Length: 139
Image (cartoon, rainbow, N blue to C red):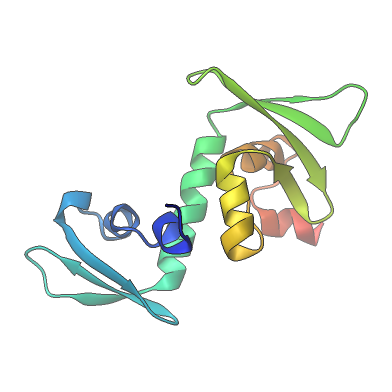
């Protein structure tokens, strides 16, 4: 079952933030502004949630760099984003609030966080010359 915790504050996410193997992470507990993380062989430590969020965003931005983006000729706010490795594609609409996609990652982010941008959305933002959702919204 997918939860907000499993999306952003999982053992795998903690391992990426702390630079260790996911198999070394024993436990992650989320609190208001920090996560308590226990890594085998280390003392448990508190990690700012902002580090988890930054890692979450950077992974999607990086994955977006690997995707192909084509603008629809007849509807300029729509794009097709292709992943040649997976042989998949998703339509992405660019709106005033940011990109809207039909992929599971985007749907999960919307459900649990009220907003979100998947790798397909970041691919479109990058194609339009924006380095982040914040820079798009500011423009």
